[in-house]
Amino acid sequence: MSSSVGPRIGATIARLSRSLRVQLLCWVLLTLLGAIGFNLYDSFWTADATAKLVTDRTLLASARVIAEAVRVDEGGNVQVDVPPAALEMFDTGFGDRVFYQVITVWGSLVSGFPDLPLPASQRTGEDRAFHGADVRVLMLDHPVVGLSGDGAISVTVAVTHNSQYAMRRQLWLSDFSKQFVLVFVASLVTILGLQRGLAPALRLRDAVRQRGRNRLDPLPPEMVQSELQPLVHALNDHMERVQSQMAAQRRFVSNAAHQLRTPLALISTQASVAAREEDAARRDEALAALRTSTRQISRLASQLLTLSRAEPGSRRPRSDATDLSKAAREILEAHAEEALRRNIDVGLEADRPVIVEGDGTMLREMLVNLIDNAIRYSRADGRVTVSIRQEGDNAVVTVEDNGPGIPVSERDQVFERFYRIIGTESEGSGLGLAIVREVVEGAGGSVSLGDAVGGGLVVTVRLPLA
Image (cartoon, rainbow, N blue to C red; front, side, top):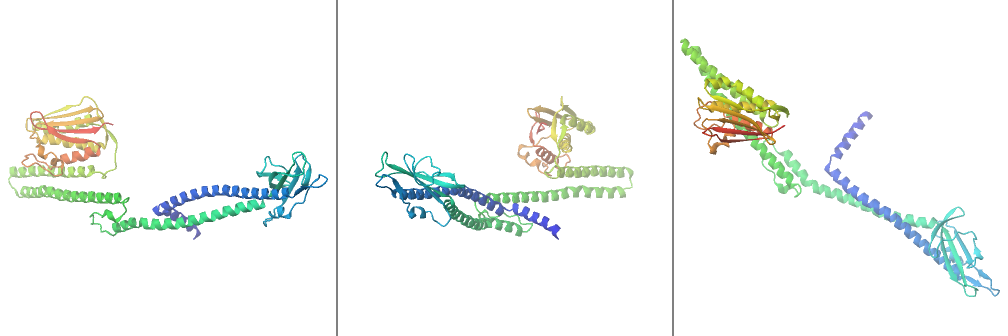
């Protein structure tokens, strides 16, 4: 059992460290404890200065009492009877020892301890060591009537530090207790404030959790504080994008099913005709039509697969170095038979390698669809020109044909999936330019349509160079 306690404690600590409430509380308390630590440090030295000041005032009062008790007898001798009050004022219950010394200005000892250390200045207490103990010492010069010469005596009083340290400790502990109460109260107020402040965020969490998987309507931003409203707006924007993507997926599936249903029905009909036909010529004609339909549906399936792979997040990102000039040459060679059959003049303008980074397979599919569309929609005895070049930091691919072109009003729609211009005679699925746009945008580039000189279409693709 003990072996499982450690992992549970570690998991609990990790969970608490990720808690926003715990993090905010820790930062508030850390700041508060730092300020209180500085205050306690400052209050310690303030208490020490206060205790020294009180001790010095007591030493000065004791020295004055002793000095006022000094007298000169008839023989001119200086005498002093130390009043008990001068020493009893240090009796605070902490066991302090008191030392004193009375000397004349010329150095004669009148009373007290002859080896008592003297401070450097008058009326200011100083710390000294005396008879193995640390003492606070203060000296006072006081005039005495009847003395010859300068007519003054010097009174020095010293006391051990017991009372001084006790006073300093009491003052500091009093301040410490106030600071401790302040931290405790601040912690409670902070916890209550965090509880109330995080309540709207918790309500937002519950509102998101309680929603069904099909509910994507926006959340009201007013349910949280103004600082958290951008988060709600971001969630609403995300749900709107999810809705749009789901709608696009539904349209895609519906259109794909529609596009596949017609060729499949045609294949079924042609196969039935070929099976029933007894005339060899007509049977061969039906089989040829069957092969054509099979190629069409195979191409459609291939384009659908390519489009799904080109969508963001469908594949692991790749960074292949692809030579567009070489890839375009190989693709043109693969389409040479179709171009010759229709007597279409195909040309490539690429005098040097042009390297881009990205998914090499998808970039080749982009070129395949551009060249296939150009050949498919060009007139018989027409021309198709592919140009690969560099412009600054970009690779520029242009594919030009002399086909019917695309009206300006429909140049945005032709990039949508399964969109076909009304009246188009060539067979196609309406996926070619949609694939091109997905691949180009995934590679960080752009694609645009224009008019060719003498009629036709020019497709221009710009991609960042490697």
